[in-house]
Every structure is written in C-alpha cells, then in structure tokens.
Image 1: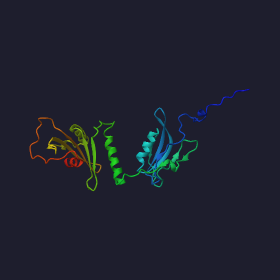
Image 2: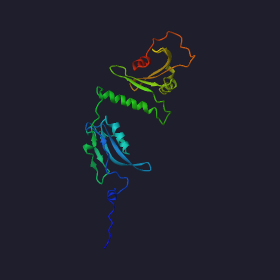
Image 3: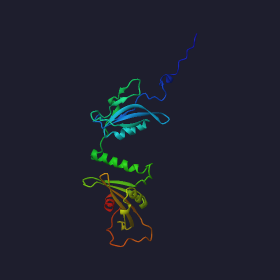
Image 4: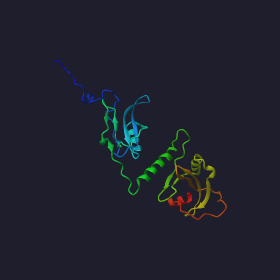
Length: 248
C-alpha cells in the first residue's frame, strides 16, 4: 500500500511566484472627476520596480492615494494624460493572470470635511504646510529648523498671511536667509503684558501668492539694552492675535 503524503494546506495557498501580490490594495477614491492618472509600481528587488496597475484620482485624493500605496509597499508615478472624463478610483490591476478593472468598491469614500471649514481653504492650507515642511528635511540643500508654530491668517482678508514662528532668532534668520530677505529683517525690543522684556524678530516676503512672515520672540540676554526710541505699547504674546499683531 502506497503512502501518499498531502502537502499542508498553507503550502497549497502560496502564490506560484514568490513576492507576486494577489491583488492591489484598497486605494482611496470618490467617483468624482479624476485629475491625474498614476502608474502603480511594485518593487521587484535591487531597487527595480515593475508595472502593477494604474489608477485615476481626483485632486482631493492625490495625497491619500500616494500614502496608501506607500503603506502597501507600492509607489505611484504620475502620467501625463487627460483623465478628466474618468471617475476617481477607476483604473486597471495587472497583478493577476489577466488585466482587470479596479472595482469601484476598491475606492474609498471621500474624506468628511472639517465642520465649518471650506474644502478649498483646507486643501490650500495643507499644500502650504507640505511645501514648508519639505524645507525642514531637504536633501539637496541645508534643511531649515522646524518652526514652533505655523499660523494662517486667510479668513476674510484680501492679503493671505502665513506666520512661521521659530524658537530662536537664529532659526528665524535661517528661514529669512533662505528666502533672501535677511537684510530687510527687523529686530525690536518690547515689553510684554506680564512686564517681561522680549525681543521680536520679523522678516517678510511674498511667496506663492502669500505674505510669508518669519518671526521669533525670545527673552534677550541680561545687560542687552532696549533700542533707543519710543517704546511700543505692551502686548500679550501668549495669544495668536498678539503674535499676528507683532509680526504683521
């Protein structure tokens, strides 16, 4: 009698080619008009990538799609194609034996908007935060110090203002130097509402249609005199409104 051993059930479920995904992961999408088409690439080892699929996403879901793909070990490469007539979340999956369309259920719902905040303002602020944060981990030039606070003043104002507040004047100077406005920066001493003497650094520039203000508020060293001239009125630097008043 011949004894035939059956392989474990787990082994029978292994893919024929190690490392080949069974299908693409769930990527965000909402069914609205797409704005960009991405080629979905998967790593094959040695720094090489292979085509795994393609997806069309709207402007709102661009960052969410890149993040979801990165978390799944994939990367998205933008293609120069007009996909405005295609729905967000549509695309093709090439990981199987035969190409197949991405099902609509793979596209998650649109993120719920923040209560009371228009979508346009939310997206515009997020784009500004992304661009400013890139300056703090740049690899092709010296990275700037991470600011302690970034504040937006863009509600009901014709001139949209973004305040970048640093912990130290030297850090604010580095930002001002990067934007080539260090020579126009201003430093003044004033008295805070609590009676403490503080030193305020401010520099200003126009950047991407915004008024970018770089600032720092510190306690000056002992023995460093207050500049001659009229002393500014006391301000409370504990509030964002006071910071905006000092910086702008």
